[in-house]
Figure 1 (cartoon, rainbow, N blue to C red):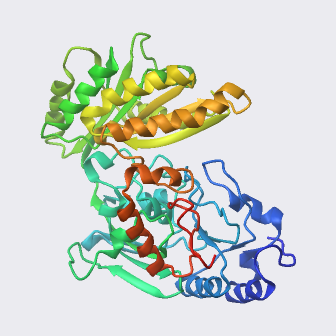
Figure 2 (figure 1 turned 180 degrees about the vertical axis):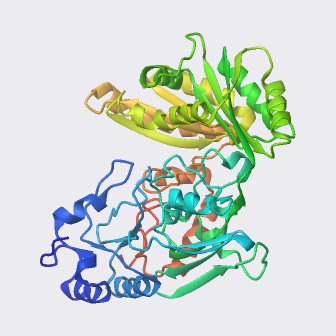
Figure 3 (figure 1 turned 30 degrees about the vertical axis):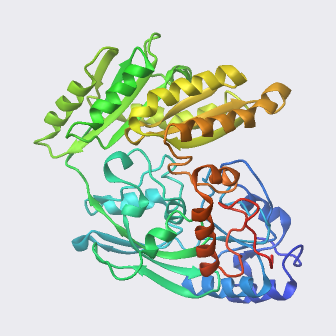
Length: 474
């Protein structure tokens, strides 16, 4: 890490004070060195004035105190896998990277608990938990790379959420730093606690705008004895959606239920060696888990639920390699989209499960209307569909049509009684749309809550709230 004189928006005295807290080897000031910390998976980019790598809770608190006193914008960062610009320092200022705070501090198998720092990756948590016969339920597609801190910031989920729920159901408590630099402790070490307000769930999903998490108590779940991956292909989207409704209405809840439309299937055909017949219009990937004694019954129940007009084929993966190929296909979808068009708008909308057919039909109509290819796949079991608008910014017609098309996508979702985000969050990309879903009085209450946690407004400014929500002293 190279060093140079302090530049841009952070006064030398403040930067020197931060250098003294963490040591010169744990800060970056040169614009070239800071450049890589100014982007995330949204492909937006703003270079921070300074990057800091704290090593512990105390250092984070001291840094927040300096930023608050000097009105320095502070953006927390994990691995930058976020797709909404939430980890981009839109106001420049200071990026606080949790790369050094990446320890698993405790595994308490007797109480199904793990205590971690925010910089540890989801994949590292899964590996460590598995050694003791457990797993942590949140499993985003980026699990090998994304951090627990980022999972907490966005209330991340993944395929298993249909059965096991999202991050906020698997975090018992937090240690965190407010915008003032003060320390708070939320939740408890136990699975039950109704003492005071539930600030843990308030902070989870707040995208670094309320507090900086420095330690999390994770609730672990025992690994199932058996797990089987299934696939079902259909002649129409309607048939697949009807199957989803039937699957979710019977007692056997799958641990994953993924959907791919015809456009996603075309990508699978082109970029993987998985054979899928040409007349298939929709595909479901289904995973069931449980005890060895009950897994066969679970498979039979799912097969019965999918056995309906429009089903082409129901397949059971016979070994781990075959199951792994199916999941690799699913995880390869999003990166493969980059090969089809230079620009992608990736949204993670949610609708009631019964509204999935109307959503897909509406998206196909919008694709035709705006001449924008739209590829849809995602977590059908809870109605969380990833809608991908593909376009070329160098194509004037497509560039001009992309935003109006997105506007209509969100209108459609809300008309279907849905939500604008299921797991990616709002960040910078969707903040101007949040008013369409959240009434003004409710949004104003959220803003006032932020002011209590972060009086000066240093924590991730410009995220979640539209432009009219601004601190008067910033």
